[in-house]
Amino acid sequence: MKIGIIVYSQTGNTFSVAGKLKDKLTAAGHSATVERIVPTSGEKDGKNVKFGRLPDLTQYEGLVFAAPVQAFSLSAVMAAYLKQLPSLSGKKIACFVTKGLPFAWTGGNSAIGKLTKECEARGGTVGATGIVVWRGANRDKNIADVVDAISKAF
Ligand SMILES: Cc1cc2nc3c(=O)[nH]c(=O)nc-3n(C[C@H](O)[C@H](O)[C@H](O)COP(=O)(O)O)c2cc1C
Image 1 (cartoon, rainbow, N blue to C red):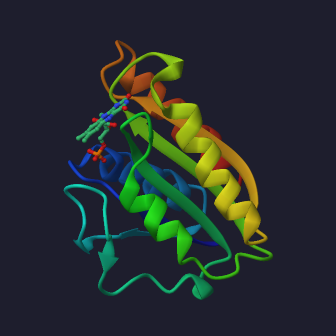
Image 2 (image 1 turned 180 degrees about the vertical axis):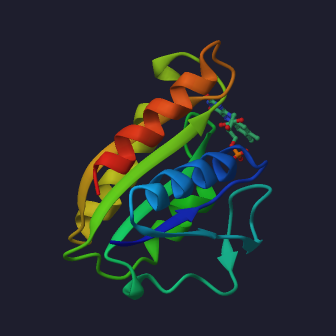
């Protein structure tokens, strides 16, 4: 399957997990591409977020959306990106987030909920989600588990 991994990453953590996911998907026989979305404005305060060139999603049968948790929810840049998404009808989708804090109430579930809701509102089917806790003691296992669960969804 042709899969696009669409990632927003402010400091590189989410991007690094996206690279591992690409390797896993490729090893499983898929064609996977990481596309990093970079805002041209609004990254600092999350207001008036604008983008330059954005990935063409029509070329992909499968999509992974990935972003960091910020301010106890999905990062404002990814939230703004989701608002302009085209129809995702017929596409298999998975989502993951990375976050700093190891407690459930610090934004991971809220961020995954937003990602899932926006994808489903556009007709996509979300088959897997994952949360990577960056400061957790088991970060490497956490990453491996999330990468594994998401790659199995395709
Ligand atoms: C402005 C800002 C706000 C953050 N807010 C949260 C938060 O509410 N909860 C949390 O668990 N981590 C929070 N973090 C930590 C990031 O989610 C974590 O470091 C993440 O892995 C960064 O991903 P990135 O390197 O792809 O940008 C925050 C980080 C920044 C810079």
